[in-house]
Amino acid sequence: MVTIRLLGPPAIERDGKPARSLRGLKAWALLSYLLLADRIPSRKHLAELLFGEADDPLGALRWTLAELRRGLGASDLLTGDPVDTTLGHDIVVDVQRVTADSSDPGLLLEATGELLEGVHLSSSPAFESWLLVERHRVSARIEARLRQAAVAHLAAGRPSEAIPYAARAVARNPLEEGNHELLVRSLAMAGDLTAARRQVAVCEDLLRHELGIEVSPVLREAATVTPASPTAPALDGRAAAVSQLEAGRAAIVAGAVDAGLQCLRRAVGEAARARDAALQARALGALGSALVHAVRGRDEEGAVALHEAIELATQQGDRATVVAALRELGFVEVQAGRRATGETWLGKAQALAETAAELAGVLGLRGMSASDRGDYPIAFEHLGESVERSGLAADHRQQAWSLAILARAHLLRDERSQASVALARSLELVREQRWIAFLPWPQSFQAELDLAAGNLDGAAEALEQAWVMACQVHDPCWEGVSARGLGLLSIRRGDYPAATKWFDEAVSRCGSGSDRYQWVHGYVLDTAIGTALDHDDQKRATLLLDTLAALAARCEMRELVVRAHLHQARLGDPTALASARMLGADIDNPALTQLLHDPTPTRWNRQ
Image: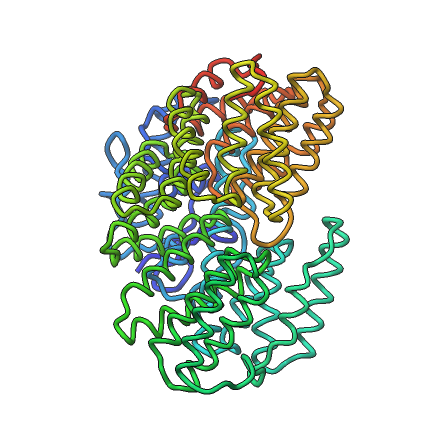
């Protein structure tokens, strides 16, 4: 058995023992690219990527491929053009093992170090750009699986087993408050309240010193949760549980969040005391959904409740509750930019879904994730089907939601007419349903179309309404996207200082909290950077660019990765444009393609 180790210092092992090492860093670079690149590479592309400075680039590639075959002890691998990257059953790759959903979670505890640690190729800047992005992506995928394992152990009542996974997640991304919350919750539920409080203090100091922010109250509350903590005061059995479940759902819909959560917690407790597992599963599903959607900063707690709901509902054969809980877990992961785990939950939900309404909800989220990722053909396929199925099910809120996401994708591709049609129908449905809490999202994108058409007064009215409503419902996503729009409005009015204030507000609002929508954060940063460069404000652009580049890479937002490189090119990096063109070659977006040909756009909104 041959093991290729790409995490930490690269190495090859044969039957668990060190084997002959590859000669030269470029051999390792070539091997990692062949194994991890999104598409099968041609020899011409590989030669240009890694051996462009050689007298005979294709000859250097042939020699290095032969070196890889010698190192792996297999003369029939890595042949052809494009290069066949199929490996034999007796060859495993550590990165692929630890990031695969089907692999043993215990392998995650052995995954240390970054991808190709110590490998740097200054002579191949395009490869260096790819490697930087890939390091972020691989680290984020491992982090997501660590979080998933920790939550699963918590939901199964095994907090002590959750601790090492949560601790590794903190080590991989110590500036993510949600990781600290998982560790604090695991320690507290395992009975080690002293360690839980100590971890809260560590997180407080770290975020204050590094980010200049205070932790949320949810983190401190997590340190008080113990196995002996009562869920709610005792009532009187199943009837009480049903009553509390209905009252909790009604209160959440009416906006009485605190009262609704209290009722739902009581419903969970009463169903458990009545030994009604089916009712307990439904109550846990409702509680988990409410924690995810109705209150900020509760995604970690909500995820634990949803995992418990899935376990109980599966045992009881309650397919509908399982589908709903899987969809909600998918939403949490997609919003956080954890693509692989999000697709895992949504794939499971789609496989079990039977009704048009269930499929519409799942497909809408899959379409949102694909759009965030920059995969527009898949996004249009999923979103189109979601709109159709939600119409058949008369689920008008889902239809309005999917239409708004569909319109966003068209707007990003500068397909304004198609965006306008989808937005008009979305806004019509939102107003018919009196879904005021969602209104700022489609309203902000409609205002962007108004700005593009020169209708500043109409855009101003829509954006001001969106901003006020977003602040009233305390939604950081809506706040961020509407503040971004007000910044663009200020640019059109020739007021750059006012625009920077709005962009700062947008970055602050959508970039705070542990349950933020990462795509909106990146979208706002991209606009703020581009606007700063348009006004020769290089200092401001530079300060924001590192954040965008790292965020886009970690969350697999490929189009924003490319845009970050384009900004870097405008700042004077001589290699960034070539890297952008390589990374964006397979993104089907006409607006982005135009930017790759002309990286100094003059259009105000930089679509």
